[in-house]
Length: 207
Image 1: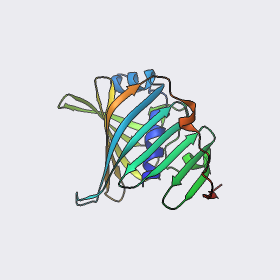
Image 2: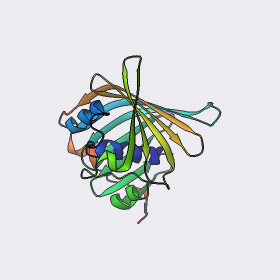
Image 3: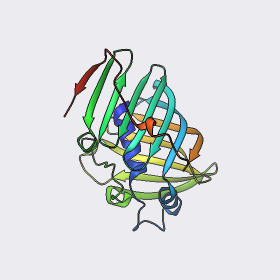
Image 4: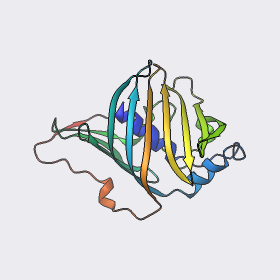
């Protein structure tokens, strides 16, 4: 679920802003239009269909458009997910194992979501503006592809920052991810988006 959600989020952030829905989603359009890099601390919670919390996790997130991101999960256990522009690396330090996947294949297998700077968000999603709540601009994104595993994403923006995403999957589970201490459009070190397996690590090439 972590891996799938990471790809989903980064594909959402990587697409170009909408055109047909620009009037209804002006805040989101402007946010995506201006976004080149993003770094933040995140807190992620997974709920089951009864609203019971199944897992809480946290860490740091870095994005450089297009096709480069880094999810560094620190709690409750460490996991690293890196896209370097060509491959996606999923590293579990406890298992001393890393899975290497072709970027296009990995992202193409995430139903209905493409990490491509040439893709417009309104091509992949129906966008519905929601009533502002507690100072947040809110939008509902629903994938157009019938085979998507996710039924909807609620986006919350505040003061030109991405505040929260709420993801509903087709099994009734809900993932909420909140961002803190955001820094936008500042130069990021290139080594954030590169990965060399440590000595002794099992490398699984899943192509």
